[in-house]
Image (cartoon, rainbow, N blue to C red):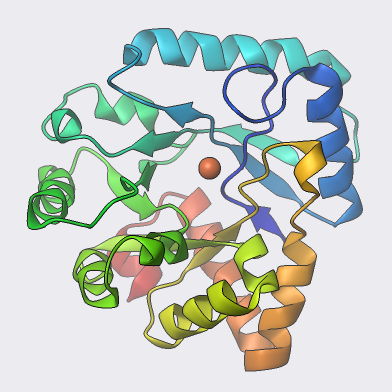
Length: 239
Ligand SMILES: [Fe+2]
């Protein structure tokens, strides 16, 4: 089964699909690619908007889209891509931002050097045990931070997600391979935004991984995805 854990397919809510028509076209592409389930993860920036307002906007965008969904479209779960901010640490509303039917949040790191303060903040979120943490597109931070600091973050009890598109380009593919070989990658997503950017095929990304590592890696990702959707603990998924 193909699970896409990161996407911006909801209409008019962030820098993803601008309207219902574009949402439907993105979902058509995902259906053609054989995606079974997609998590809609619109951006959430806590400095710009209250959590309640964000959730009501997101749910409203989904309700607008719902009548246009086709039977062949992937099943949609609601979630969010939450940009890390120190004010999220200890925030009792954090569980409201979890992926539907799970206790996991998809956490995006700031596009800057990963400081000790940020890493300790993520650690505190995990220790508070209100939510479990998936780090979004972990390969992208290597443009801004060292491999060593990224490892420090990924050595916490976090699930790692990579973007299928990063497997299509030489430099980012090399980073993905290194992260996979070091055991930091557990699930994939497309991070699909706009139709004009082209569909970053989950299927093509999976094919690249199959050629490099064999079927086992895809079976592992599928198993991780199923466990995550059933809200297993970090230890159960990674252990
Ligand atoms: Fe994203």
